[in-house]
Length: 58
Image (cartoon, rainbow, N blue to C red; front, side, top):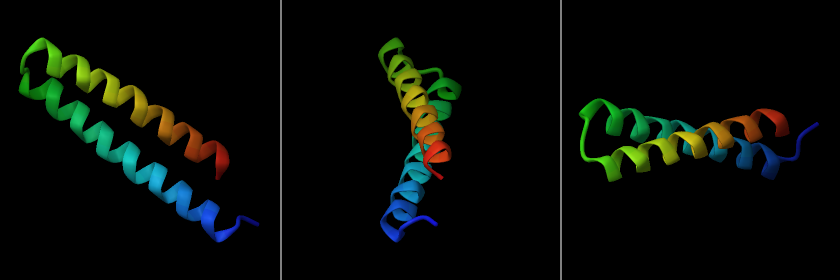
């Protein structure tokens, strides 16, 4: 069984990953300048990493 703080950490990771993915999609769709697009790609990478780690820990 998971401890409550582990569940909370997992939930936070999922929320952060969704948030980061939303930012990344927004940056790519809006087609703003190159720096923002790079930031979007970085946000997508971190969101994927957060989501994966949350799934592994869960």
